[in-house]
Image (cartoon, rainbow, N blue to C red; front, side, top):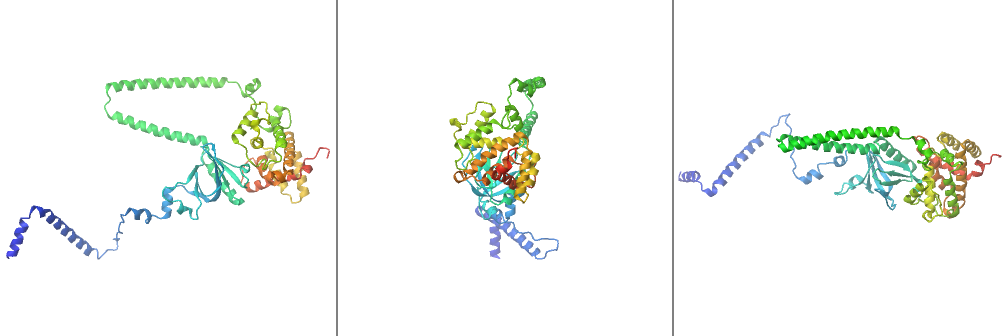
Length: 475
């Protein structure tokens, strides 16, 4: 009894230093009692009640163990992967600045709008998820894709040029693989808006964003009571914007009058203010302008190459400096007196590059579009004599400017092939270089692989059988 009395007295008068601890002990005991009750109740579960899984609050466990690889990849890129695989890649320009060509194997991932280049790895999906790793990304909006056999000695090379001025070469020795990639990338580019649409869409987005910010700012200022001086400035701005819109309408009306009164293109050409371009014009128009059947520029280039380039290694295959080629093009288009023996054109690859560019930029190729299928059917003929005869008949049907230009060009290329032991350019190599340039369908179809093969074979056959195909009229 005395012990209980002392304990009761002690509990009634706790010391200040232990009062907090006593309260905490009581709370802890209450919680533990509640826990025991909950544990005893949870021994029997109804069918509708599900056992709650323990929540793991450790950040590392969340980031590495609870997420699957597919979840990580989906968070990186929400777009659907259309194609992926290994190709050889070389970046030859960055923002318009030329780079040294350096081939490397890359794992390429193609989506609806972009391409990503990853480093070579047996498991690319895992290797590229390292912290801080960012793959090289290429925006396909407004990009251009074309076969460029003259850019490399490797076969099956095509180039992608982006709006920002980046240029990439992609290559594979497997024909069907590289053609499949070419089609997939081309289809992705065709589905996207063109360059102007891309830029306009970005501009529209920026305008919408800026207008929304201005709207929020105006709402914020309207919520406050404007001061008298602010009201005056607002009235001034409204008057200024009204006068500004009137000025714009005045300028628009003046521009419309100017455009309606401007002289036609024919009038400007007759006065000599606008000259006909050599590059990018139809072959027959260039010949009519020069009163000949072979463009003078073609003759000058062929003479220069035969004078100092027949024995140059990789002639017509090696690319010249693009800036110098463009400069030569400008001189030709301005109808300035052209001297290809000048020191600025001393690199013979610049001359050959300009000649290939002239034929590549013809609105209709040297082999007209209407003859393409006929030449393809002729090259399919199994008998060699019949095949040569069919090609010869088609060549004779060509328009006079096309026939004469083709004859002088193939005679020149035959001289190049005759020096194969020195310049390493065989008829097959010349066929690969000039096939897609001189002969192409009007509309690209799914038979591009077959067409590409036939283009090379047609040029190769016409070079090796030149004397039988380009015979004189008397024969």
